[in-house]
Structures are given as C-alpha cells and as structure tokens.
Length: 323
Image (cartoon, rainbow, N blue to C red):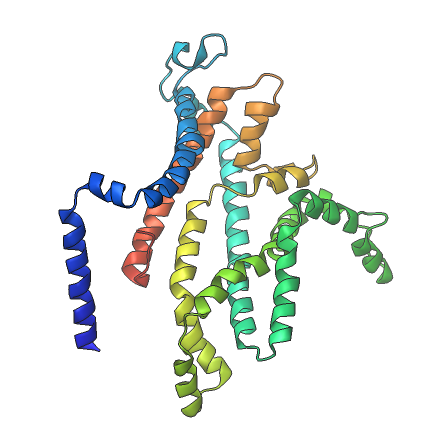
C-alpha cells in the first residue's frame, strides 16, 4: 500500500510539472471546450453576484435618487453608528441569534440521524418510501407551509385547537403567541428540510467500503456499534462543512418565512435583521436605502468573521475545513 501511494504521488507530481511547463494560452487552445464551459458560470457570478456589490457604497453615503450613487455625499460610518446606537439593535441581534441557534440545535442533528437510520434499513422499498415521504416537503413553497400553519393553528377551526378542546383546553392563538412563534418556526422548518438535507449524508455514506461492515459483523459488532464506529466517522467531514456554513449565516435567517409568520402580537420575538432591513429599505413610506444597506453590510461582515473563526476551529480540532 505504501509503495502504491508513493507511485501515485510521483505520478501526480509529474503531471503537475508537465502542466506547469505548458503556457496558459496553449492550454486554453488545447482545451477550449472546457474553458468555454467554465466561462458561463464565471460570467454569471460576475454579473449577478459581484456586480451588485457596487451598490454597497451607498452604506457610506447619504444616498438620494436624484444625485445617484457617486453624486451622493460621503458620510463615513454614520449609518453603522446609528444602527449600533439605536434601541432596536440588541433586540434584533437577540431575536436573530436566538432563532438561528435554536434552529441549528434542533434541525442540524436530525438529517444525520435520519440518514444513518435509512442507511441501516435492509428493506430497500421501506428505505426509498421513507426517503420520498421525508424529502417531499422540501418542494412545498414557503407560502404554502405558512398557510398550512395558519389553518392548522386557527383558534376557531384549526385541528390543533380542536385536539386541545377534547381535553377541555384552549382555544389558543398559536400564531399570535410570542412564546410559541419560535417553536412553530423551527419545527415546521425541521419537517420541511430534514429529508432533503439527509440526501447529502446518504451520498457520503455510499463511500463507506462494504468490507468494513463485513469485517465488523465477523467480529460480532451490532448495528449500533457499526453505525457509531463506521458510518458516523464517514459523514463527519460533511457535517463539519455544513456546520461551518451554518455558523457563518448566524445573523441571517429565513427572511420569507419569518416575514409571513409575523404579526403585531409576536413582533417582539419575530422581528429579525432581515425583516427589519426589508421594512426600512423597501417597505417604508420613506425608504432609507443607505441605512438599510449599512445594516445588511454589518450583518454580512459579522457572518464572514464567524465563518473564518469556525473554519479555523474546525481545521484545528476536527481536521476538516472549507479551505
């Protein structure tokens, strides 16, 4: 095995040396089809992902439509200071972080458990049926999911209140109760995304050599033991990568769903940074474009810092990272 790895490494080095000796222009001419295919996503990224960043400049200006982006006066960090000093700052940070962390703790382990269980099931028809049933909710629109929640939790005609009525309880206005809002948001999200997220882990489990399981069976290992010592380590790198990405978006939650589930009764816990930016930047009678952009940029910078920190910890302690 050592000799084989050494031979592969030597071959890889020879290939890299041969490639570096050929000029870029010659390589493009030789493989122009591949470079043409590469150009399509690069152009898409440049137009739709990087060019709009030009508008971030207005976070440092008092933007007005008449003067335009470059004609508007520079104001430095005025809008950032205004947001940090506003009475909304800590409430928005608390609501956003709490909702995201709650969602992460509740929904992150579920796809892993589901994938491990489905991978262990011997009956293929049962495994495939369970997969179909669990990932089908992913294709339901967010508007429809919130509509179902509204109907099911209706104080007068909802199924939830009818069940409570059988025990002499209720009715309860679930959507108007700020103490229930977070639970409805998180667990409805878990129902919608758990099955689809499990596909990634199921794909990672296909890389586990069957010989490992066969050897473990010969040694008398139970299914739980094999799941713990063989399957789980195989999906740890994928889980770490997904966890890093989730931590990087800790100040960003599902904008559409939160906005649709908001009402005046649960606004004290349902107002998050994304919905606040939308309201002051686009939905307000007097849109504050610069202020909204500054808040959005603040959120992105914090997310980038958290992403780098999480990636550093993961590389040091879990031996797996994004870069």
